[in-house]
Length: 204
Image 1 (cartoon, rainbow, N blue to C red):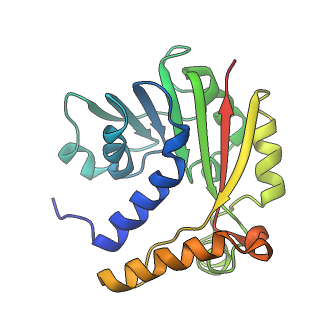
Image 2 (tube, rainbow, N blue to C red):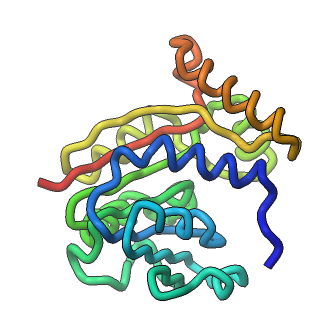
């Protein structure tokens, strides 16, 4: 299996570093796991990790093991029983769902305590040009994201952070870009267009 470039791994790790303080328990479900690389990184924080996506990915066979399982499943009809996982996570999956509210409630159903929702901000200038206009990714605005999180009917908080893949695979530039992201997070006028919306939903 060809390893991912350092710039991609750095981005993945930055995202996890932004959300790991909200992790709960020993088991995690990664809903909409894509190639499974994020799910594998979660094993640093959980004893068991299961990921699913609507279709199988060829990289899965290189990642699965005793503590990591990857399989095809439907986010709007998750095949696991109620309260199966301590934490349930999704990243950039809900804006692809036909019914994101239903998918979110399914995530809440199979979680024991915590659901972490991570979606790109529709009106980030780079994301809007590259992903919305050119890639037809219908990301949520911050207002729509809040409405979606509220639809779960549970306690929640919403946060925001800055992260994106460095355009070049050079360590110095990757480090500088991460420092730039840190700076952007401290600039209030940037908040409406900051890259990521983070929702943390907690079951009582």
